[in-house]
Image 1 (cartoon, helix red, strand yellow):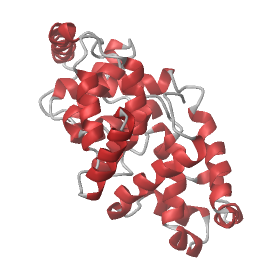
Image 2 (spheres, rainbow, N blue to C red):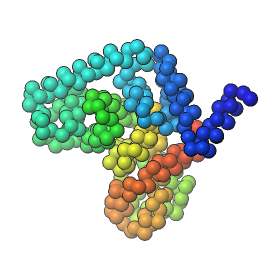
Image 3 (cartoon, rainbow, N blue to C red):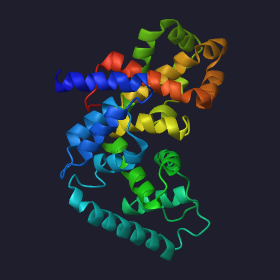
Image 4 (cartoon, one colour):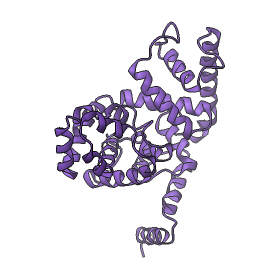
Length: 293
């Protein structure tokens, strides 16, 4: 029996006895033992499998460029990140832009604005749409990551990825959503069009905020695994699967406002199944993804 066939046999066996993912976890551990982490392989792994929770923060930090590929540099680089975090935080305290009463996610936002050279003159200034996106992602990240320094850097670099790497792709996602929903359920799409709801669906919540504030963090992080490792198109299939899952409810609603309001506040107890089916749908239409948008 070849090494590949042995691995496949073991994978099938582990799944049958309830240990799905054991082999994948071992594969990731092997990748993480390399002196110089292979970004390409980490991206491919994250595209194909869910990241084990114990390694997720590390892999995200490497893929987002917070940590370098070389293991031996991790401690020193994180020390620099911590010092930079402390310096920026101290600067905001000195100019009295923040206080002990400032919510933590707003602290992260003002730190990001200060480092970007876009800090307003006063915290009372109205938030920009991009600020709302940052806050939503920071709030979700806060539920996933305990350490405040990690939370800030992950949020900041994830938002930068969305604004830079995916800048040209994100505006195309609503059209792709229509395309794939039509393939999966043309009748449902016709209902949305008849209700004048297509242009008023919560695209900002789905695509700009990457479902932060829509899905619970336990499900959301599985979606972000794919986005961070190279594919924002997974967001389209999560949106399509939400519509398919709640088809009966949506079909019973008439009027764009009612449909949009429901989709902005979907029941949370179906989220794990929605994400699993969305990933299957993504594989169905896009094949086995490598790290491409």
